[in-house]
Image (cartoon, rainbow, N blue to C red; front, side, top):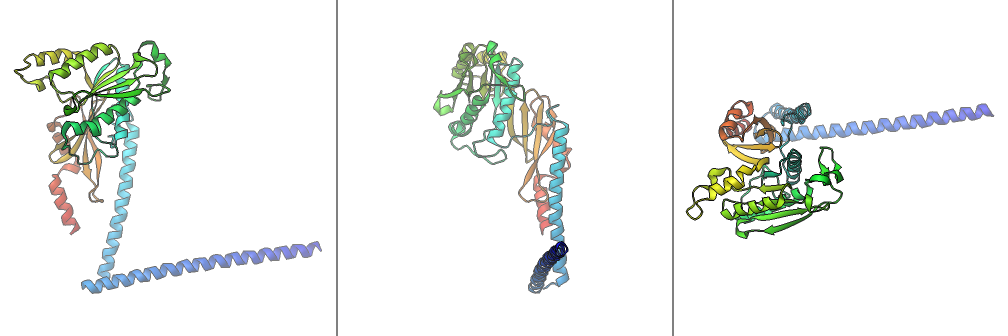
Length: 370
């Protein structure tokens, strides 16, 4: 009886295995038949194209093969370039600033600025200048942008939102309150609750505003930022007043309209304005701890980035050889001082991607496509 049962079980197993194998063979045959049908359909389409264009079938098939190989090469090159950039970033991570990544979005820029501002504050820099690339939320850096509404539009759509978010994230503890903060991965302090951020317009037609972050710890850790001040003597006096009130707390100037003391020029109505600005602003420091700017040099879209404590980092957008209307960032180098157009031009000439002018490269691509 036992032998009979074993024999029956073995026979059943053999039948099941044979059924499964037969089913797999049928599926393979079906897939092979489908593949052959698709290949035959593709050959028929190429034959039809050849007939319509007055070419031979072999010429059409050769062209199809060339396009397929070109597409595969483009995808492979894209992957290789991405892997090379990743390896380079990892090798140079946070050593000399060469690993800094250009922030393309509103949120990325705020996070990068926050880190730079907090580092500078921990090093004793309580008066700082931040120059944002004015990117509205939901937009990106490498995008043409116009401001027909002038300073008011710049303030409303980008400068004030960027500043409010920066002050919501920045932590600048002073004195004994530093011990009440928790430590983040980059060494910065972080309170359990974010501060209350308030905005106050100064002169609406100038787009200027005073942003205040009221700390949950207390007034001793409040932070203030003056947005879009210009060379009018009123702003110089406002800065002097805020500076006195803030004492050793963090005070930021956001995208001021001046570059240096020469920006004041001579004003008959305020002949002492440059002298006052020198005393109130430039003698006090207000170092640029974070700057992100786009520039056009030799027709190329360039970017310069300053993030404390690193040197200025210079980049340019290079055309993607395989993907029309696409570009990627190339790091050109660095400078100790704010880069000039000549600095960019010199570095651009050293890169193979920019040996030809942008117009020449575009013409070359058009000729290749034809």
